[in-house]
Amino acid sequence: MQINNGYGWTFDGVAEDYNKFRPGYPEELYDAVFEYAGKDRFGNALEIGIGAGQATLPVLKRAERFVAVEPGVSFCDMCRDKFRDFSGFSVINSSFEESEMCENSFDLALSATAFHWVAEEAGYTKLFSALKAGGVFARFANRPYRDKGNLRLADEIDELYDRYYNRFYGYKKKVLREFDEDQAKSIADIAGKYGFADIEYRLFKRERVFSADEYVSLIGTYSDHIALREDVRKEFFAGIHDAIERHGGKITIYDMIDLELARKPK
Image (cartoon, rainbow, N blue to C red):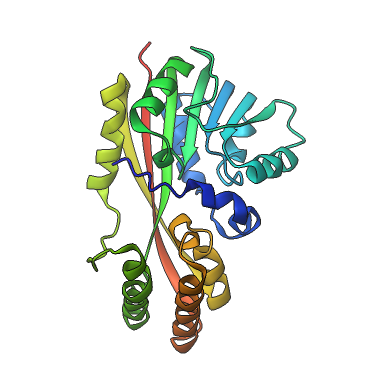
């Protein structure tokens, strides 16, 4: 399940909102990564698509050297400032495919809600080469789902998506599906095609509650929403804001966070 819709360029223009409204990841996820790796200290760590650094700190604190690769200039500047107190931290302003990676260099690589932007064959092949024997790849992502506790609001927002989003992109209305184990397994299995072993996946759940203003700011950091024509986006977001206000002023998002783990054989 490799998805690259071509809108990766959009994020860098909303870096501040991305930093403010995009979530981090649960402590239990990092515990699972360190347990799988068999250690919680690393000589060299790599992050692919650091963004605003929401996933970075728990690994950065445990790495002697931490290299991030990020195509967005604003994100690179933000992370250099955010992690300036870590002498071992550096960030390369490049796509992962075009970056220069030394072979057999990293003990751990992570990519958080970012590896779907990387071309599959090029990405996994380069990553396999960059990891040391026994090195670990932790791929994870946040999968938000509609408000299951307020179905009238959820249905109204679905209709707004059909009226604005689907019409703009020429999509047909579809039944939304909450992310599940089958999808996580499908993603995890990709690594096996490129020589990785000991493949595992795990799922974590959480809920987040937003005001109308906060939720509109959040979806304003989604690449395909940013790419909507401005007049369409304005009406679409206003409709969502109004719907939330009319249905209690809050919206709950049900997140599923999937973690896929794989190891380069020794």
